Amino acid sequence: MRGKPSPPDIVRPVSSDRAGNPTLLACVGLVALETAGLLAAAVFFAVETVVATADDRTRAVLASVLTLLAAVGLALVTRGLHRGRRWARAPALVTNLLVLPVAWDLLRGGRAYVAVPLGLLAITVLVLLFRPAVDAALED
Image (cartoon, rainbow, N blue to C red; front, side):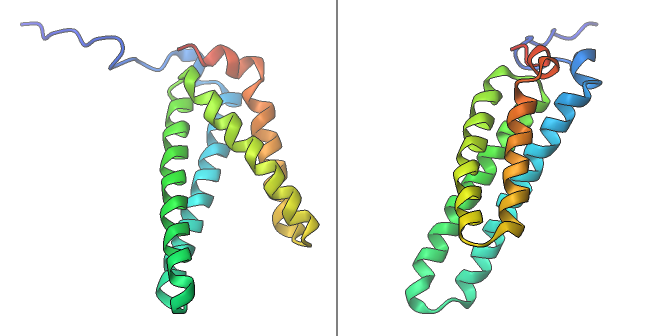
């Protein structure tokens, strides 16, 4: 007895060009690293909510919630890139373009130890997003 075939939009096997594509996997790994950084920031803000003074508590709660929402969104982008979805390139691109001015301001503020790695991470992801191997793998 045969079961119903699943619609191609719901279940799609990972093609061999995506499964063994080191450029795409590097891009996915770096975007996942950015997601982990956002989660760490959300945890930091949540802890600050507990230990903050009353006038800072609202700001810490808002920062924690917004950072957590951004982390969830970037996690979905990471998942989309890993599955080879073309739509995931645009939010990854915009996210990393927004990171560049943040890194620049951190550098101007004397925090090069944060700015340089953050800027290099964003530039690397931007370059990887436009590599031909990634373009070929994103075939939605």
